[in-house]
Image 1 (spheres, rainbow, N blue to C red):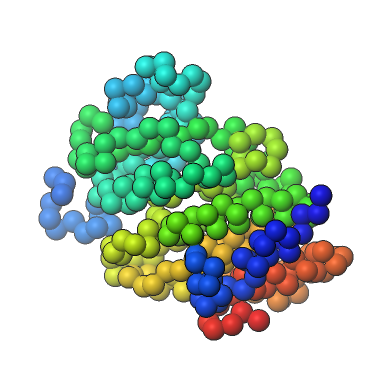
Image 2: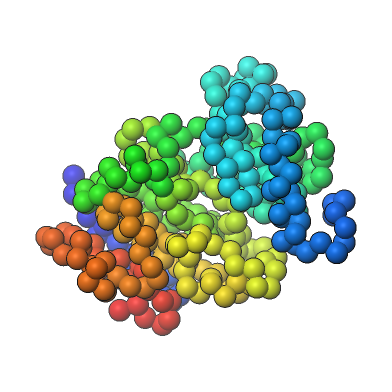
Length: 308
């Protein structure tokens, strides 16, 4: 099977990151008032470790087995089982650390429910969407466990170093899932290796973590100056932060960097420096690799007004 990105219309979707090209595809708490938004976030992160193991049951049914599935700045991932017995086996429960982020929690639930696609993470259960400050049932959602780990793990990304056919297969899968999201007016805004989860040892995957996604039909609620996006994979137009117009081009930029990360065996390319010899050298071996390099140069670029 030829996995060249030029096939199946995917190349057309990814080719060029200009706003015009993308648009044609259509794509209250108890803290003192003096605490700033970021003080609140720090407070919840600081106190979260005390509460994670204390609440053994979520939603009256999801019993914590262990907390070994990872954590981030805004959430912790717990391994749980269903005490109701409706679902067999173990699952991943994502507990939101900071209830101040409730709107983003609601957006994440809305986005996942909207996107029925085999390569977008499934939603098994979640806490009540109107339960902002509950002391008993924290904000959470339940998903399948990615037995194959995420692309950010060395054991996973090293599999793709120099393995262009496998890289392109994974890239096409991600691109098709993103296209579905963009057509549904969902912009992920956090495409990075850690959010590409593999179901097992093969190349089957899920795009996960819609925690900072943008639902284009909703008003923006990003505070002025707050930068939203994946560090090292963020499109340059997002770096100023605040309430600006975000397009699907931001996800395309991030995907380009993820593709390079795979091909290079774990190198994070800084900004738009693909043309520099130290980064472009690995894209010069063979015609297919060279064509992939041309594609990446049109993804990892400024969104003004042409990426050529």
